[in-house]
Image 1 (cartoon, helix red, strand yellow):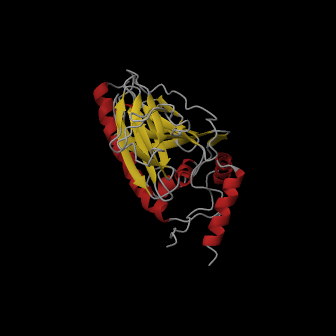
Image 2: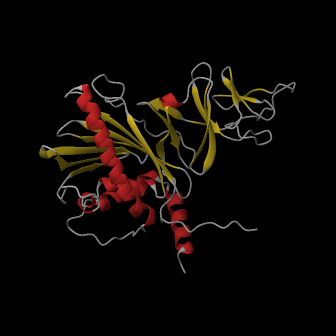
Amino acid sequence: MNEIRKKPRFPFPRYPRGWFQVAYVDEIEPGQVMPLKYFGKDFVLFRNESGELAMLDAFCPHLGAHLGYGGKVVGDSIRCPFHAWEFGASGKCTAVPYAKRIPAKAEMKAHPIREINGLVMAWFDVDGEPPAWEIPKIPEYDSEEWTPYLRRRWQLRTHNQEMAENVVDIAHFKYVHGMKIVPQPHLVEASYPTLRMETKTVMETPMGDVEGILSVECHGFGFSTSRFSGLVRTTVIASVTPIDDEYVDVRFSFAVHKGAGADVARGIGKAFTAEIARQLEEDKPVWENKTYFERPMLCDGDGPIGEFRRWCKQFYPEWYVKQAAEEYAVAHAS
């Protein structure tokens, strides 16, 4: 029976190049194993007894067992639950307990990962190329001057590029979220792989409106920081990772500066987290049901959407862009 595939929603590729969060560092301790599903594939994440973290393709090359379900860490390797073949962090087979010699090609693909800012970031490139840039360290993480992360997580039926477009779509904050932000000139700097945006904000508080600055810095589609100044300095680390052809895994990590006191920071952190979560829930039905126009009808009050979309194209190889556009055209021809 032929496989029935859903029509692609967007005329651009599903999986952009970049670093994407697959876990938090404290979620996987030495000896632990975690199955993952991202980029339309299965993986296994494990931390060996030496503390080294590794992410491999999930299926044992012997007879196809998924190492994320029943696999065990043994020393510096992970042991397959089916026939006890063992694989190191590099993916090379390190032991076959019942064989006199290990097959020369016994290997699982290992993927570049980094532990940074309390996040486990994995590199994805559809062409299999090595990392083209690194995620920067941020001063808010593991600092006595900032609160520990408050975490929120969602699965949404959308695309990384569609979510990221909110950065420059300044008008929607008023009309979707009811915020006192009106269309206005704002600074955008777009290079590869970083996009920076800065704009004025007005935050409603019990003490009245407080003006501030929102500074956003995106490093590809998988990691961004949004820093709010004004009443209290607050930072949101947004990590959006493609799961499959339909869904993305969204993690927001919130940190608040303790300048006004730890108790005040915790209270503001909870309120700010709730507010951002409210806004995301308001965006959700739009993201999950909208279509994409390559030539949208824009007006002079819209943000620099065209500049943003030109920046986006850098994260897809040309053959991938062409393939996605052709598949979209065929699927939507009728």
